[in-house]
Amino acid sequence: MIVPYNYLPMQFSNHDAILADWEKLIQSTEFTLGSYVENFEKLFAEFIGSKHVIGTNTGTDALILALKAIGVGPGDEVISVPVTFYATIGAIVAAGAKPVFVDIDDRYQMDVNQIRGAITSKTKAILPVHWGGAAPDMPAIMGIANEHGLKVVEDACMAPGGRIFEKNSGTFGHANAWSMHPLKPLNVMGDGGMVSTDDDELANWMRIYRNHGMVDRDHNRIWGVNMRLQPLQAIVASHILKTVHVTVEERNKNAEILDEGLKALAPFVNVPPRPIGYWETYSLYMAKFHKRDELMKYLNELKIEAKIHYPVPLHLQEAARDLGYKEGDFLNSEIYCKEIMTLPAHQYISRDQLEYMLSSIANFYSTL
Ligand SMILES: Cc1ncc(COP(=O)(O)O)c(C=O)c1O
Image 1 (cartoon, helix red, strand yellow):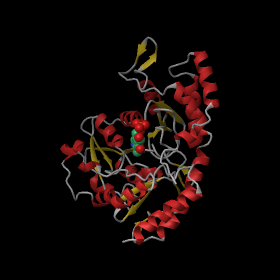
Image 2: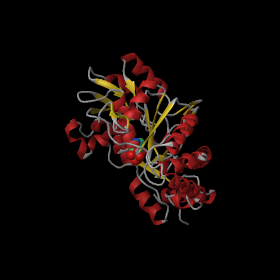
Image 3: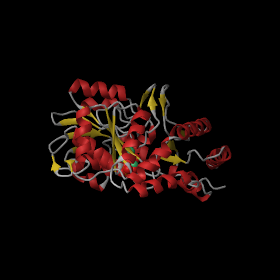
Image 4: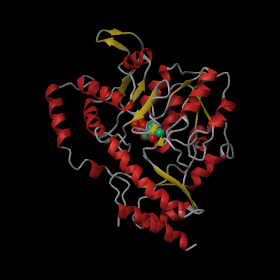
């Protein structure tokens, strides 16, 4: 039995509605910004309960735009984590600032107990990541930020449809970044992203900056760049948005089955805690596994497409050489990278496929 990681062929097997809207777009020739982008921004703002949404061409640009909007620049430090996709930290560097790491906790999220110790006179902002689609302790992070007069940018790239009790992920920070990369819960046919904020001034600045700093065709208020969301992708996003709740619900059901099966395999498998009120998106379904590399090889041979996100923590990447970190600085992150594995748990995985994964993992450990 094949257990595929990639669900895109199934998700886009029927794309007639998207093609029909693309046809209208082609007739309108509204190819840069315009009504399709505005319509999606409005829909997503309603979906998460945010005052403003600004579409961008990637999640990476959304992070850079949000950081620049809150005033991050050269000489500033931004606190984040070594367990995330490269773009989180790359965006801090692209905004001209220095990334400062704190370790992760047992849920693979920013350890809030370490933030105060990382704050210096240069700290401008905190950049927590909703890693895998699980929320970090955002109320605690906002509390620390307020205490110290810091801004917060949430990396909510994996978090559309996630929430803490009734408050949606990506609505806690001052300006928050989202991605619509094809393997995110809200995805497009290529690249796309957005920033959400409740702050009118930040929203105005970001709308202008992402479009060359123009206020109209003949007037340029600030030096900006082109970070615009493509109307073609805004159309795809508007269609996919209609089913994100169902997608996330299905993933939660699959995760519950996997959690139960894997917990029975302790101490070989370590499933992260799932606190009450934290509704995850399972953009990545992850747990820690004893003999991870051997297990993954075994599963891949059985055509179970398990993956690693990711094997090297960011403080030990070559790109981080100038930051002055060394092995042993962030032990939880380092152990995570050695033991973590992602199992396919997306909305197209069947009960049989879940059982097959669980029995294959149990078989592997039964031979030890
Ligand atoms: C946590 C996180 N941050 C940032 C990004 C960057 O998003 P994009 O690929 O849309 O630039 C991604 C995904 O790729 C991500 O998973």
